[in-house]
Image 1: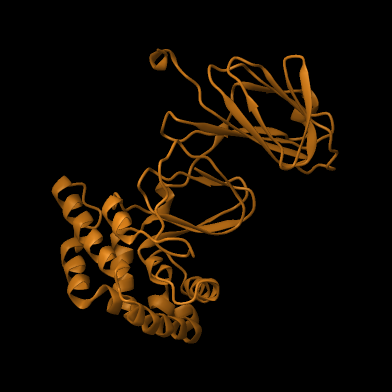
Image 2: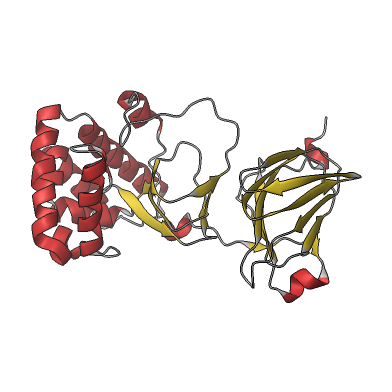
Length: 318
């Protein structure tokens, strides 16, 4: 799960199939790398079935998507360099009309600017073309998205809080100087496709923490980000007035508290510690937790903390 601390942009999950088909039609360098045979196979397979709920159709779509994506990921270096130069020149010269004016849910100028920016950071990288397969997402401060296991993503710019379940690997294939394991990546992905709206989260108020009166009057908040998995959830607490306080009820599980802004104190039972930007604390199960702000931010967010936690319910107990 990704929660934006600053304005953020990235790539997340495979786009709706109609968008990928649009780019194959309107980005010649992209189609060239995918290959005419693979491009036609993809187009013929998904046409009229892009949003079908039929399981047979969905499996056929995923197979065609995997085949086209795998072909792109295995292009040779010389072909990639030539295509990258063509893509860059198109982005610079076409502007708002780039990629067929961006397609159904994209902005041509925005995509053109993205190509130029990414090429400046990773020249002639395969990621320049992978972006036409993936959703481009922008998050404002406090917005979040959830990534399922074995789904593809790339963080492009901005600061985030990332919370993960236990994982035994990170498989890389682009926008990195580190080892790229293309074969493993192309074999392991789910090839699920959906608009980015299905991956963005809708946070809610956290009901198991109490703000004191002064905190309420200054629009402080406890916001819950609860993904559709049992492994973790995250609460974002903003206390924007000196002396504002949030008291968290004890839970049947551990927590990790990270401060991203401001200063104050953190208390567990009789023990009180200073907390400020960059500080991290572990809080054991069944402990009441109190966070208090010492920063007078003149109406802004003075102290911001994120509390990641896992609560063990009765069915999970041994």
